[in-house]
Each structure stands twice: as C-alpha cells, then as structure tokens.
Amino acid sequence: MTSFSSVLNLDEISATVDYIRTMFMQGSTPELIYHTPENGWDDHERYRYAFPFASGEIPLDTAWENLTPEQRHGKQLFMHSCISCHDRGRVTNEGAIWELRALSYPRKHYTHTRPMDGLTGASPYALHDKPPEVESLTANERRGEQLYQQNCAFCHAADGTARNWIGSFLEPRPRNLTGQQLAGMDNSRLKDVIMDGIEGTSMPAWRHVLDAGQIEDILDYIQRVFRQADKTDKP
Image (cartoon, rainbow, N blue to C red; front, side):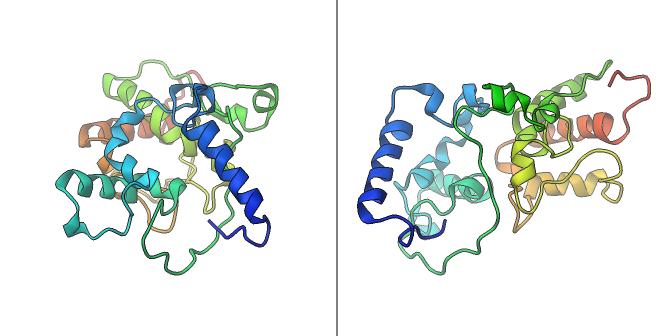
C-alpha cells in the first residue's frame, strides 16, 4: 500500500475512508461485501481468529508473548493466509515501505464462480473459470475437486491454467497447473508448497485452513485432472 498523499488531498482521503466504511464495512447490502458466498467466499468464518488483525483491532506487530493462545493462532493464520490481500492491517511501528508489485483486484460483484455482469462474462478470462468436466472421479478426487474450486481456483483458475482474472494480474504469476508446467515437481514437493506457501508470492500456507486429508484430496484432483487426465475423460 503506497502513500496517496501526493495524489489525494486530506478532504479526498477522508471522503474515501468514509465511503469505504459506510459501503463495505457497515453497509446493509451483502453484494457489496467482498467476503460473501455471492462473491465466491464460502465459509469465511474459518478465518475468524484472524479477523481482529484484518480489522486493525489488534496491531499485527503485537509481540507473540502478549497474545492469548487464540490470538496467536489468529495472527499465524493472518500471516499465512490473509496478508497477501490485507497487507499489514494495523501496526504500531510502520517500518519501511513494502516493495511495490504490480497487482490488480477485480471490480465489485466479481466472482470466480459465475459471471455477474456482461463485461465479466464476455471477458477472455471467463473461459478459464469453467471447471473441467471429468467423468469417473474417485471419492477422494471428487472431494478434491470441490476443495480446489472453493479455495484454489480463485488464483489458479477453475481449469488450472491461472489465466483467469486474478491469476493474470498477480505478480509473480500463480503456477499453471496443467500440462508440463508441473513436470519437475513431484507430489511430495507440491504438498509442501500447498501446506507452507511460497515466500515472496501471493501463495499462502494452507495448513492453517485445510487439514492434511483435504490437502491430499486436492493433490489427487490435480494429479488426475491437470497432470495426467485420462484420454477417455470428457474435456
């Protein structure tokens, strides 16, 4: 988050803050609230322990020893899963300005699960937000499909190419999971990446959100659908 003091005056900044608080933090219109099922965020309550750090209720740089066990869990969850989009939340010591990276977020009402308006639906990104139709998935792969589409498709696209709206504008780009893109990465390494994330990227650590069994199901789905889909499967 760079400084806007050279772009907006104090009155304009105050007006922007008032608008954000009224429309997105205190508003009564669910479609304007980002973390909702309507905008592709099912079960956002699983991040509830991190909410105080996202809202600024607890400064992110509060010493670990000064936090309760529940707050320590929330801070860890925020650091691994939320910080990519929420930046530092609130801190008592701002420190150095973070390195800027090219990044674009979607307009309001955007969802990676279905077109919400004519422009989104007609965009070249919409093609990649359609999940592959694959027959005869095992029970594990079917669970992995649901988990992938709910959690991973937001950045990696429903078809695994990372060529959807979000994936195309993140820097560095999310990994394309299809074809030969993962040829040099075995399942053990891929599991570690999913569990621990990748430092310096928007890839968070999912070990704090998904359990080991769920991550294994996602691996099974990626392996079957994106890495070695059977020729008899329907595209």
